[in-house]
Length: 163
Length: 282
Image (tube, rainbow over all chains, first blue to last red; front, side, top):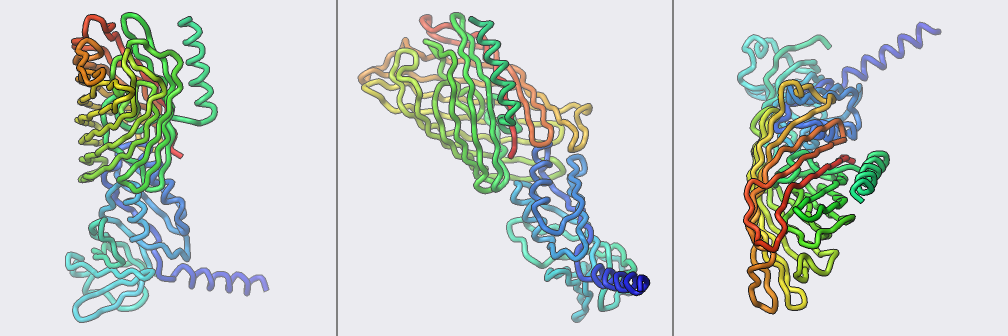
């Protein structure tokens, strides 16, 4: 009986963690020069539901975010918090699970209602080996104008990881 | 008398620290600056300010409450507790966001330009518009009325170097036939954070500034007639200030000394200004 529970729990956990979601975000933040800046950003991010560990580095100019399993956070939401704190959100390195689709020659990744178009600068071998469906990957999301944030992004895939 | 003032000052500052009520922004102490609060951000500052002349020394506590309406628009309200008022008070703005005299002031800061172009680096410009009402009837020998103040500043901030340049103008309305002269002024600030204080957040963060303030008080009027012997005279002040930040807390202190002053003979010469400021970001 105990074994069945463990198996069931493992299946539920596996299904849950393979849902399309952001897992980690290393968000570059420009213009942040002092401790209260970092404190304000950290506090703003902590108000978001779905964030686990948050580390803000002034010297790196980055917010390192670990997201909890099953979160529905979006990159747009994270960058809006950066903007509200008076800074500029730039490129972000993400670890995510999403649905990869091909339309014509263009690959797109869907994560939590956001669309990431795969950038042409992605390594050719990675593009060649892409296959549609559920995928876990690491990538660099290109900078978008903070004043016109939308749910559409461009991503340079850095690595495809096992689900 | 001065010993009592000192004890009172220390007690008040300690009390303020205990109840976690703290002071001003993360820029310079005296000069105009540019940073504004985050959208929805709130902070509280408490400052102790003193201005010494040849004859006397003022002592004032001042509080400022600030709220970020947006990330570029900030509302401030500042109120004083005057402990010792100078009978011949020089006309000056005092701290960067606070009047040096007994005015109650409400101000809006609008950061109309901001370009964050690198890690920790940004250029920005901010405009200030404020209205003040005095808590005394006369300043010097002149009836003091409400006033309007406008200023503009622009600056560069990085993890190592800072600089701000700004200028402002305070215009006093007439009261019972008398009008205090205007106060045009300008400020220049250079800041530096040594490598030793470059530890990453949440470690404490210190920086130092060299601040300069130039003031050009205009002529006051009585019944429309200029009174050239009351309260006019240019002045350039210069001095160091230090700012320490830790999490939501900030402490800054500094002094200004006259590098040049051209006061009238009947106005006591200024010797120095001191300021101590505590900040808490809520």
